[in-house]
Amino acid sequence: MTDITKPKADAPVPPTQQPSEVSVSARPPTSPARILRPYLRGGEAAELIGVSIRTLEKYRSIGGGPPFLKVGSRVLYLREDVEAWLQHHRCRNTSDDNYAAALREMPSRRNRS
Image 1 (cartoon, rainbow, N blue to C red):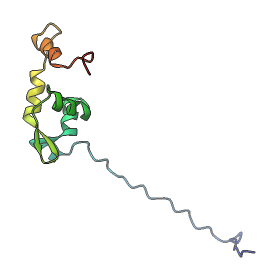
Image 2 (image 1 turned 60 degrees about the vertical axis):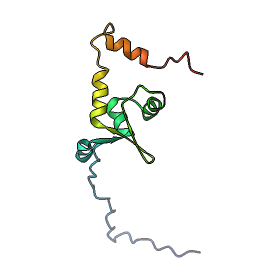
Image 3 (image 1 turned 180 degrees about the vertical axis):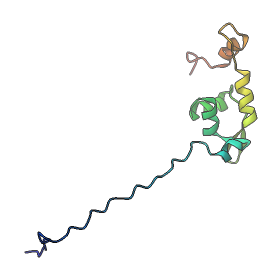
Image 4 (image 1 turned 120 degrees about the horizontal axis):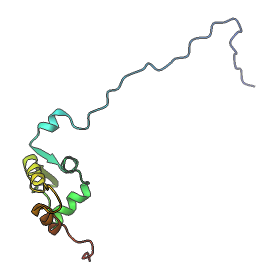
């Protein structure tokens, strides 16, 4: 038999230890230091453009994306280049020359091998 001691009926019960409410501030998605950096990593550039990292990888291999730098195994994008690339692709409507040029630059899904 195990000897388990039960608290006496008139003994004060210690208060249950509630974990103190610790306010953990969530880290902002982009810290001020990253906003001011002239070079962006692939994920940051993809977020700025509004595409996935895989789409940027595709742009690097087939062309059509912003200029990039390859430093060792790291791929970097100059913030100015990404913003200029975005401005270059601005369109006012679907009859805009930039819109037609953007369609021509994109690889056709039908012509994939």
